[in-house]
Length: 173
Ligand code: IMP
Ligand code: MG
Image 1 (cartoon, rainbow, N blue to C red):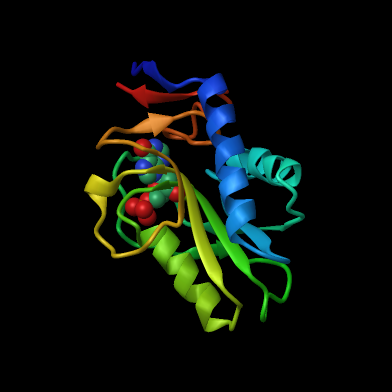
Image 2: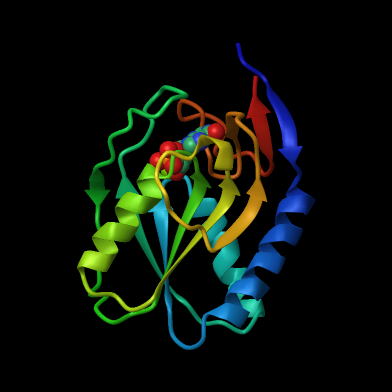
């Protein structure tokens, strides 16, 4: 059975999320809605919106669900929309939030879908970024931590549906 080696502690994540929220609140003026990508980003979004509140922002909260890795460590390369946002976003400023940007396909897919609907300005945010793994050209405006080519889990992020409940992020060996 695989094991988990701690990479980012609970304390380190909390500090980084607070700093990220201050950066976001300084950058995005006025009304905006956070759109989290389920299920991986749910825990991050829950902490991020409260940190945004402390930083003076008052964002709306929405979620979209994209197809996942399933039980594998490698992406199938195909992204599908499994559940959509529930409100009309025309003209709204959007902060699109995912747990990890790996090849970039998921967040690029969600961003292009939202842009087709005539939203206002769009920013992207990921708790973790794996720049070495990128296959699609997409700018991530706000990054929590950059990581190498490792497979991680915890803090909402799963490996074969395990470990989402961990309060820290670890490498799956
Ligand atoms: P991308 O479409 O290749 O950028 O993959 C992004 C999605 O893959 C993220 O939303 C995660 O759900 C998942 N993912 C990427 N890397 C990892 C990992 O190391 N552990 C668990 N899930 C991952
Ligand atoms: Mg995901």
